[in-house]
Length: 393
Image 1 (spheres, one colour):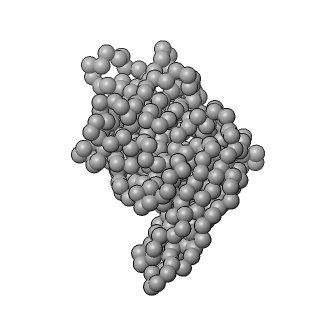
Image 2 (cartoon, one colour):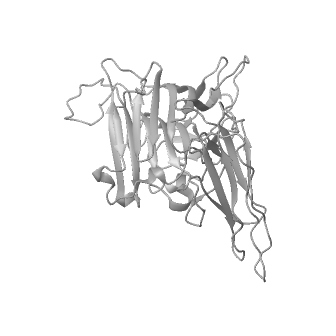
Image 3 (cartoon, helix red, strand yellow):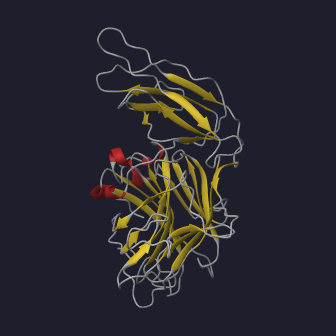
């Protein structure tokens, strides 16, 4: 999905795929600076192994008691400054590293540096975070509120889409608990459902995001999904930089692990592409650049003989420093590879090494890419997600 500044607020859980449980104790004090300028209170670092972290990985939270202060941190051993990564929300740690953090605030001198080392020694390809969307009850349940929040409203997020996005359990019209747009069914599996239950031309769906709750940088992420195939259906599994609240889109960077439109309809590439009608495909893309008018991007399609999104496939991304790879079902066989050294990223800055990103799962209805619904469009249409998993790399 193409992101727009009006679509997002922010999230952050700086995971540089790190893991750690314990490590050294935090150091640094709030101190009260000398003279007339007080010193900001040094950040504290707390960790938890809940909310999806596993196998030695932890989720770290940074905080300071100085009102209005901003926290900056590093994970490479360097001393943090105001040019370092800004802390916005908890972040996953799934590798050996040391977090150094400072707090800054107007009318305060910078705090002392807080330092905490993490050394869990997690092997590559270890599962370090997941949401399995489990449900052992006999009724629908809501997605975890500790992992997911929602974009909401009519045309909330650009692209001239037709749907109203509803939060899970929302009763604000046209949203309704009798026709839920996001739920976990008995036996498990997240269902994101596009509905038309009211007047003609009124559509509802859901857009889940981990913004403000969870993010990561580097590793392998994948989701196993079954996708709808119908005119105007636009399911997506993607990521945005936490810093979208400070640098806007596309400077924050956007990673589209999976996008799919229409299904057995006009093939990707449009008329003249040489692909016959019924050619089903998904696409993996990257977006960056200083502004929408100076956007840099890349898009690659994937398909195989007989490929259909109506049966489960695993859609994944391998994220390393300076490199993004996309795959379907087999992580050893990427179909698209993007590198910071590609000519397209000179002089456009490569945004994918500048901080963590948060996850989005949504089913759009209509919009600039697939076009609007028509008489052949199937309602309800469901995007089913069996799980989202992150592995160390």
